[in-house]
Length: 191
Image (tube, rainbow, N blue to C red; front, top):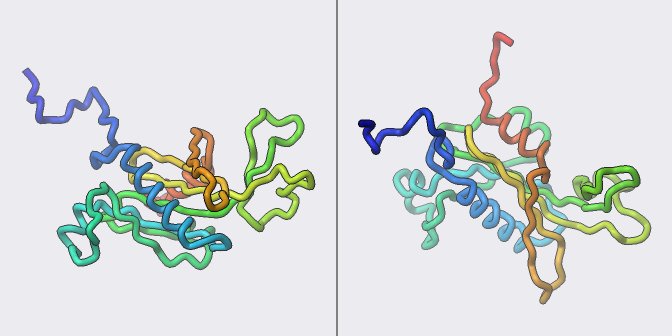
């Protein structure tokens, strides 16, 4: 009879290699989204290392505040240029995941598209906004766990007093999620 305390290699762990779930990742991304919302609009993209809170509790307990209940503690990284960062980032083993927060413009589907709204990084494509005002500013936060799940969430810009709605979709931020996942893939010098 198999030992129930040992992992079953025939049944993959839905929480990923370190035991973190998509819900844990989603909670960290929501925390980041709230943080960048509080800082206001017009910010450059920001990058976060997702460090297990338990690791910080052991190695740097003074860094943690009273809110040490979450699985991850997001730690903002220096990022003068997002493309350069994504192409060159190397994470220490203690970092279990990474996330990026960017401002985007969500535009209606173009004629002939499959009906999926499109988006561009805010300010990079003047043609992204349309003349009838159907485009909306939003924040996109995409994150990945090392060797595990990935997720993206989005929040449309809201006015004070308006209900805040956080959205997600399997096709949201796929390119950004892939680029983040690539920061955890070691370069193969023989390739």
